[in-house]
Amino acid sequence: MMKISTIQTMGLDAGNASLDLVNSGYGMVPGEIVERLHSYTDFLTLACRHGIIHQQTSITLQDEANRNPELAANALNEVKYVRKVLYTIFSTLANRGKIDQEVLATFNQYLADTLAHRKISISGVKLFRDWSVQDGDLSQVLRHYVLSAYEILTGSKNIFIKQCGRCTWLFLDESKNHRRKWCDMKVCGSSDKAKRYYIKRKQLGQQ
Image (cartoon, rainbow, N blue to C red; front, top):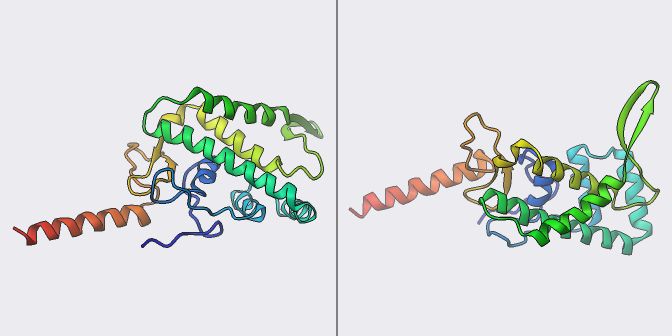
C-alpha cells in the first residue's frame, strides 16, 4: 500500500502551481479525495513551498487565522472548492473531454475576483504587476493559484496537461517528445514498470 504524502512532503512536480494545488487533494483513485490540506496552516505551507508568499506574509496570515478560526475555516473550504473545480477542468482537458460550461462559469467567478485585485505598482521608474490586498484577507493566497490556473488554461501549453497513468495526479508534460506518462518517474513510473515486470514473469511461469 502506497504511503500517503503530507503537504510538507508531497512532490511539487506538476509544472504549474495550480496543478500542484489540485494534486494536494487526490491520490490513486480518480475523483477520490486524499486530503493533505487539513488546516489553513497547511495551505500557507503549500504557498510558501511554491514561493507564492514570503515567510513574513505567511506569519501575518497565520496570526489572522489564529485570531479568527471561523474565517480561516471558511477560507480553507473555499480553497478546497476551487481545487475541486480545477480538478474537473484539468482532468477533462487531460482526457480530451468537453469542459462543462457550469464548471467553467464557476471558475470564471473566482477569476473575476482575482483580476479585480490586480494592479500596477511603481518602484522608482520601474512598473510591475502587483496585488491590491486588504489586511486580514485570508483569500489573497488562493488568488495566486486562480491566476496560475488562468495562465495555463489560456496558454499554448494547455494541450500538454496530462493525468498520471498510475495515480490520478495531473502534470504539465514538458518533456522533449511530450510522451511523459507519469507524474513522477521515480515513484509511479518505477512502480508501474515493476508491476508490468511482475505480471510478465507470472505469465511466463504459467506457460
